[in-house]
Image: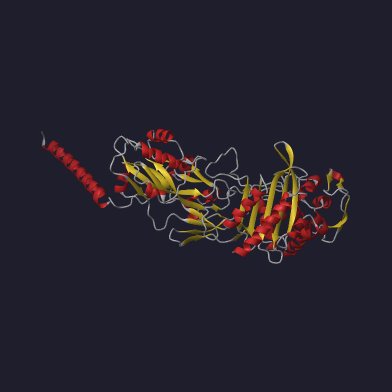
Length: 595
């Protein structure tokens, strides 16, 4: 063997030795120096991750952040005590199985059959659905001696089975969403099975709500995933000083619940209520019918959709926009007189009052919601002037609070599912007939209850459009505020209506209640002002009406702006929206004395 060849072999051996040394040093570092150092996004150490590989467990709390109402009361997140079954090689004796079965409300045979087939821990469900069976906390210690059975604290995210809080939304597993948005950033922290926000505030604030790790009940298994007897169960949790975060909303939980109950009492099947703070335009309550169950979502059935932010045909409440345009453009004056015969012959339009109103001023026409007068105003106005005025009042566009560059440069739009609505169809060149129909809030006009309530706030602010908020702060776990979401305005690119026009419209809304279509509100607890509306639509192939009422109260010092919509009423049915508006305002008046 030549000297050169021997040197090569020597160098190769030296190289192998160096590699082995480096590997050995790294192993020592991992097992000793890094064993107790957090290496995952959830704060778990190497030792804990190693133990996790030898465990089977069940999640009791995902560690997701919670929502609070404006006073700090919880909107999500309630700790309940639930029964959990763990797989066993040998089930407890017959007497214990009978006792547990009695507790769970099932037969011993049913329990034994379920238990014997378990491969993973199982939270016992209630007989009413998919929600866990809730037991009393004091039962936990009593049953702790039964092998493989525990009563454990469980974080129940949603407080009700059914509610009108579609704005709050729901969570679900969305693996494609996680892959597309987060897979390239930190896939270890975001497993594909993670429950993430799918709609509502759960979706828009999802980036802030994901915690640092779950709370689990786990037990040690052997190589064949069988429980190792004698080691028992242990609870593991991600202890963090700052997370999970909490989002404080602008909603008053008490008002929200009272209004949901009210819609149940009145038998309202479809529709919405929006209550805005008259000072800042914040959402105080938002109810959508039909109710939905955030624990059981049927995407096809659609009850998860938020009717409060979906655009609908507005009917006569849109006359507020038309009269504002007429006054701003100077095509009519407040005292101008019109003649209503009950028919507007050109286009086959008619007034709701048989025989017409006779001679009537513009002010009276607004209070009486005269179709003939407003059809004529529609013809006097140009399509551009109607559309621009609507935009100035926050219609035909999304007005909810939004920031193009919020925390970390990410865009944030608070209100999910919000629709912009419309005044005219895209690309249309409206003739006189189209403008006349539009002036009555028909044809292509679409307005959401949120926009309608915000229109009232705009008038109260002399033409300045507010951007309604649903959330106002984000807090760390220790109670320190992390971020503030301050009030915003949502100005139009076309400017604003004049304060004088806004004042006129506020005064005319008072006339609606004192001498017009809203006289039924005169017996309300507060002095109110507003505008009624009824629009023609089609539901399931049959003619139907949407009934609206928008307004504010008390007139002397406005506290709330409210829009109510009752959808798909039978033509000719009593105006339920007016009665609903009155009862909403009475509830708000009562709540003022409680705060």
